[in-house]
Length: 403
Length: 106
Image (cartoon, rainbow over all chains, first blue to last red; front, top):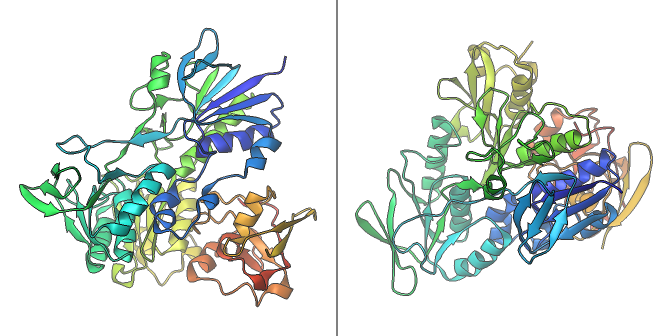
């Protein structure tokens, strides 16, 4: 009997796993289980071009349907895995169907963190994670005047930028003392704060939302003991790993499914990849990464391990965000103790922040600065030591920075 | 729909009809043409959709943005005809476009 690999989750990691397993020579049965009605699609454009209406749904899909047919991957969509019976090696779906496996890949992704305050379930309060979420949000955008963005992170600010482009009044409510605090350094936060304010966005820092108010639908927001008008609110206060299924199956889980450098879980027949996992990063920290890069790369390494050719996952993480005409590209993970080197002038809307640890580049954040990003990524991977004054000197092109 | 010819590094040819407004990268991905990774999905963020535009089409594919130019600077096996295929928008004028893929995207 041929071997069967089952993938739970139809997202970026799941799609990559299908491609990699077949490319790596897997000839057995392949099944993908997904809880949305769609084959794997790209989530990053959801808060950008798809929300704006400039990208059709068809263009979101990572692969054409023919890809799964050609890869002989059975697609079980619009259903959900309920339990994993590790002793019997069977996944049970919600409608009583069981799917046996020899090897299992959990790529269940993440879900939005929900806000807990009075009125949080009022019509007009939106989240943004899926096609369905944006399909609900977009018509509301057509009629809204005042948009509340709850949480000044990537998602909130990207949606805020789209809303401003459409001429809506936008207010961002951020509980912390700067925007994107969890994701970027202070110089980047300050730059984006100013950019959004210059575009007419009202940003309220240190201001947590206390309640959504309205009769039958959202009409105002209570924050900092004041009330602000709001027709719709988009809440973007982080995501949580979808690790419950793994936890209930008895796998080692703690804010993410714990995986080893080969993306293997505590069960030798089960691997996990993407947002749902927690692993020891290349810097040694036990981390959860929420990004396309990690989904793609972990899926590749999980596929190799499932094929009996394990290699340790040590890729440099990378991220990006599009807001207005600005492309933010980040590589590596910053630590609070890193020393910062700013290269270029933020006022020119083209600059980068390097994070040095033991005199080597540990992370780079580049705004409209591709050379800094690309070279920075290489420097991080190679652990090259580099004098800070050299990095700061824009007279030296990035290409020649190590010479 | 404009037809685009994609030629793999080993010379294998693929022809695909790509809707106007899509990118040359999307045309390859949606038609299962190997040789273009496009990890970032077309955000000009990863430089894994590098192609060589046939010289006959150099004038028609449009100018490179600064961002694309600098991303390309660091691609492997760069040539004067190098482009990031996610940044070339398909239009009726590009009917018959020929692009070749490099040996590797990484």
